[in-house]
Amino acid sequence: AATTPLTVATVEQAFKEALGAPQGAVQLVNMIGPTVARNSIRLLHDGFGGRFYEPAPLLAATEAEPFAGLEQGEAQSELVEAVKDRIVGSALLVAWQLVDEGAVLEGDEEAARQAIDTAVRLGFACQKGLFAQMDRFGAGRTLALVEAVAKEYGVEVPESLTRWAEAVQRETFLEAMEERGQNPGEAIPPGAVGAAATPIDLLPKLGEIANV
Image (cartoon, rainbow, N blue to C red; front, side, top):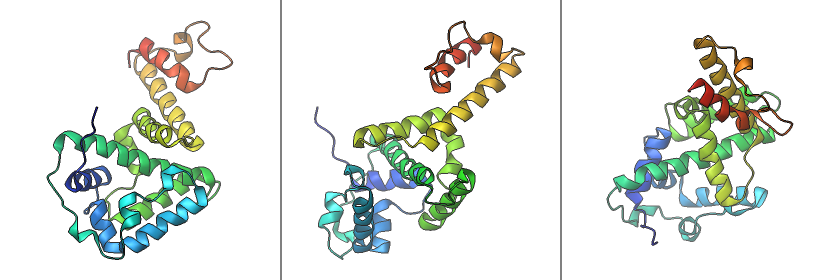
């Protein structure tokens, strides 16, 4: 099936809504200059390789002039949510990669997430950073958004994200069981926990039992 071309207005609206930023992605590039944006992405591509960090063809072909001549078009309301998911998944993938690599405050993941959020707020003038918004998405959805982007570009899901999601989902399940007055250990079906089982594998089964 043919893919509907995205308008600039759609991307700008999705970017602002996804990150809580006052400006869209194209406007941001205009502010810092396409040359700076392009060179920054190329540095990432040189360091990490892969398709994920390749400069977009439009940006790679643009000289120093801002994108002032781009036709904005109308925002496509039916596509905004899908574009938001792509933006959030991509941004969180990079953020969790930074945590994995110890690029920020190595050895203290919580402090690293706070530092990255501070950089995001300052860089994009957002009210909240990426990690601060994960409570709104929930652990399962956060993991799914990142997994979708990682699969498309053939990169690994950051281990720090998987650990965080498992911990949050485990805590959520235990809290739900306690609210029902149930013993979580008694609710686990015989044989449900095997050598290869992980909290992520097991939680859907436990969630059905707890009806959560």
